[in-house]
Image (cartoon, rainbow, N blue to C red; front, side, top):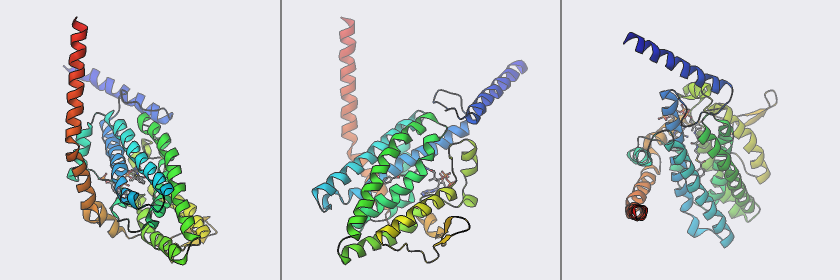
Length: 325
Ligand code: BYC
């Protein structure tokens, strides 16, 4: 018995050493490789929340597909929203390789156990919001996700490569909407400014709490799940986006925003973290509406899932009969 325990202990140590060496050498961890339970769980948490964000993220923009101002705008918006469904599907599949079922993940979303990005709990009030979301929200997503192409878990890293290419198209279509509005009538330019005023701060919150308040950053950086911290990514986003607002002739709604010659970065004002936590805890403007839309979609799709299972069973029965004769 003692020998058995000793052997198990040695085996565990050697598995841990192989795992740590792979992380240190920037090799990918694949689903069938041994991994610490906490690594598996934290990946399920982040990847499933990321997947939920993509799927819930379809809702605010889906709201404008029928009201897009031209056929061209409608085609582009439709394609973007469909891309988001695709991103959700890659991510759910990547997460399933860690041993959680899709049903469990949906259940966690519907019961409020799993989070999704705070940004999607804000309403889309005007067409300019489609521009602001593409420019700012997808812009923030690119900054957050490009480093994730290098994350240590293989299926997540590979999914991110494709997702980032598509996000780049999304960001451009958003910026182009903003450019068109800003070169239009005064009313259109005001609409663009109003959208920037409403989406700026929530976009900064997308990167998560400050590093000193972040629960997971330290461990996730060690595992190379996260390659940059929340604050580093937020600063990168601000540095990149402020000059883009200048080109549009729009004003970023932050009186404390100022380029700092010494650091080469923009200093910025205080983020309202109370608002952020309220939204994360389910008390944002649209939390209830978003979760209930997802629950309804799941309930209404039951007949499709049942039919697909019945068809697969029928097909496999026929196959069995064919093999038997
Ligand atoms: N919203 O320790 P922290 C898209 C939670 S979709 C809500 O820093 P972590 C798009 C966090 O989960 C893009 N919750 O966490 C789609 C944690 O709570 P739990 C979505 C947030 O994981 C459609 C707690 O706060 N992108 O682009 O180290 C249309 C403490 O935080 C948020 C991703 O999902 C938030 N904003 O870092 C258009 C990227 N921030 O889990 C566009 C992948 C934090 O302990 N995810 N929390 O209960 C990540 O990179 C990281 O998970 C985060 C947070 C940077 C978001």
